[in-house]
Each structure stands twice: as C-alpha cells, then as structure tokens.
Image 1 (cartoon, rainbow, N blue to C red):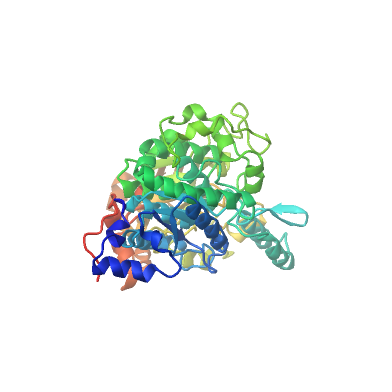
Image 2: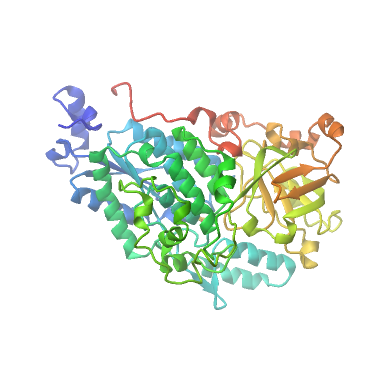
Length: 571
Ligand code: FES
C-alpha cells in the first residue's frame, strides 16, 4: 500500500480499514485497495441545472479515463446551481456549494478529483473547493450549447432575451413573437453560448491552467469533449502520482494570466468576484485593482455577444482560447504552469486563428483596451467596476441627476411609472443588492430603462448598483459598488436629485454633494427598512459573515487554504 491519502482509510488489517473497504466492495475488486489512486468525480449534474444536465455522460468518459490509467473513479454528486432556476439568486449559494464540496472532498477517502461544472456558479464553486482542499484536481468544463436561430438569425441565449424583452417593452416586437423565440433559444445541451459568465469562467479556468489546454469552450454536444473528459480522467491519476496540486498551478502568475485572458475575450464582470474568491481560498495576493492594472491595456480580440456578433461555437471553430492567447503571448507570464505540468505558453505554438472575424489579430483589435476598469471615489471607497467595452462610449464621462431605488421591488414598482421624474441624462441608482443587502448580490445592476424613455428611443443610461450584472447583459453599468448600502456604504446616503459624476478615464465615481453635508448625511431610512436580517439557516450564516465584492464576496472564515487533512478517524 502506498503513502496515498486514501490509504489512511483502506490500508491495514484493523477493524476500521476492514469497514472502509468492505462497504466499498460493491463491484470494486480487491485490488481497488492496493494503492491505486481513488479519484472523485465532483459532478454538478442536475435536472434542475439544465446547463449541466449532460455532465453524467461526461462523467462516464472521465471514469473510463481513470480506469485506463489504473485509478478508481468515484462519482461524487455536489451541490448544483441552475442560474435560471434557483431563488433568490444563485450567487447566494455559490459559497455554500463551495463549502459543501470542500468538506466532502476532505471528508472522503480520495486522492484526487475531476471537477465537472458548467452553469455560471458551478465552476467557481468547484475551483474554490479544490483550492481549499488542495487535492490534485483538474476541471472539465461542460461546454456551451450550439447556436439556435429565430427568424433566420442566430440567437445568443441570455443576451437576446434582454434585447427581445426590451423590444416588447418598446412596442417593436409582439408578445406572440417573443413567446415563439423561447423554443429557439436553447438549441442543445450545454451552458449559455454568449460570452456570459459560464463561457467566461470556463475560458478563464483554462487560462489559470486548471483544464487540459485547448478543452475549454468545446461545445457540449461535440464528441471532442468526451475525448477531453477521458483524457482528464487519465490526467487525474497522473496528478496524484506527481503530487501536482492546485496550489502549484493557481499562483499569482496564473491569476494575472487569467486577467489578460478575461480582457482579451471580453469576459463577464462576474469573473472579478469569482477569481478574487478563488485566490482568497489559497492566500494568493490578488486585488480588484489588479484587474485594472493588468487588464486595462489588453486589446479586445474576440467578437462575441453580448458586446459583439458571434457565439461560443464560432469561437471554438475559429481556434478557441489558445489562438486568442497566442496574440497576447507577450503579456502572459511564461512561468505559470498548467495541470499538465507544462507552462500555459507552451501550448500557444500550435494555436492558429481560423476565422479572423471571430478572433482578431493583435494589430486589428475590436478595441485597443478591453479590460475592466476599477473606479474609486466618495461613492465607492472600496471600489466599483465597469466594463467599458459593453458601455456606450459617450456615457463613459457623464454627470447626471440621481434617480434612486431602494430595492429591486421599489425599482419594479416605479420604473415604468409615467410620472417618474427621469430623463435620458439621469443616473439610475439601485441599492440594497449587494452580498448582504439582497442577500446574495444578484444580477440586477443592468436595471431596465424606464419604458417612457425606451419608447423615446433611449437605449442606454448610466446605472449604478451594489449588485452584479449578468455576463450576457450590456450597457453603461457601474456595479459591485463597495461597501454596499446594507453594509453602511455611502450608496445608502444618496438621494434622488444628487448629482452623480462618472469619469471612467479618471477611474472616478463620485456624488457631487458639498463635503460637509455629505459627511453628516445619515443613511436613507428606506435603505435601512429594506434590509431585514435573515433569522436562520444558510442565509443567516451568509449575511453574518460575507465579505464585500471587492474581495470576492466569500465568507470571512473561509479565507486561506485549509488542506486535505482530517484529524480524526471516523465512527
Ligand atoms: Fe446556465 Fe447561462 S443559465 S450558463
């Protein structure tokens, strides 16, 4: 019997080892306990997470790969989060999924793990868990769905829901047509096919080095994904033999590479909180400002919705992430390793662009600077972010009168009121949507525009919110304002009529109120009334311990790596 972790359960002739082995012998041969690596397949398949419902098939390929390499594969269902299904928001449960997975990886007799995720929060939660336990791990992203069409035009799932529903509100699309589009939107298995959060996190995970290079972005129905899953199973066995752990892959260098990738692909703003949270689990020094410092000068090379034209299967056909990264190779840290043990940059020599419309060469970018801008100011002392590539250029420097909403319910009650005192220059402020306030930091920051302005042809306005924005959304949206209103942030003190000043070039977000008056202002009573602290369960633990967006919105007691040790024998 080797010195592997699972041997702590299975080795020996005492009663406990007998029990551990005996209960596992349901189809497993005796030599399953002779020192072979036991590989968990952390599988977030669920019928209630439609984007992940095909992961059981991928798990079968992983299993075959593990067996082929001499390991023992073990299916481990984990908490699954269907972005479109769970209430009040999947983000409330990300940390719970991460914590539950972390504990089950640590508690069980396993030596390594293959992580199967897809829908928005599932890969971040799995990465956070793997980082915390630091067992040898590799991610297999479930892949995007194929492109659907409606009225002969490609539909970007997510993005086109917003567009079509705004058309209905503006009166340019009938409800009947809108309903017809519903069955065209989701063409196949897989996650959203725009550059939303799921696509972003899959690609960014590859840039981090945590997938087999070249696998992320492979469409879910593509048989090459099954091959990749098989290979990942084989690799997991090798990872155990080589003792190659996430802490050796997820270094500051690899996070900075991921930020370069995030900018070059025009990825979702949600990657900021997820990457900060993963880094926090390992004690890797990474700040929100790193996203601006490292990503701001990176060119936008991928023309995908929501900001652009194409969809994920186009990106895969055009050469995928490695072809994108080859264009920005000089910005990547050559030392950052992947799970294969080789540096990420080693895989760029064979990468090629096969469609220059989808992936641009460095000399002809879609935008010269694509990164996420981090703003500071008296309205966001701990920072806020904006994705300039998804914003209207003319609004990136803007001064406007605040129209304040205290909660999402307040917004829904008043946004379409014909008497709402708002014009195209107004700045819509939505508070009460941060990690504590909602709770869970939902994707509401791209709040809908007032119907009367939509009818007048207005298509974008400056919006400011302490919540997040769907990766499939677009607009001039300042989000992740920290501290949030419910944590005593200055957003709670803004009143309708205050002048808000946004200056993205200067990286500023301020309210123009005389300093003395501003300092003396108390939080608006409505913001206090809107926040009702949960009394029990996960929500209570979450609200009591969640940190702010600028550090990844993780729970304060989960920061720092914990390792795989379990101090006591069971029973
Ligand atoms: Fe699952 Fe979009 S709803 S990825």
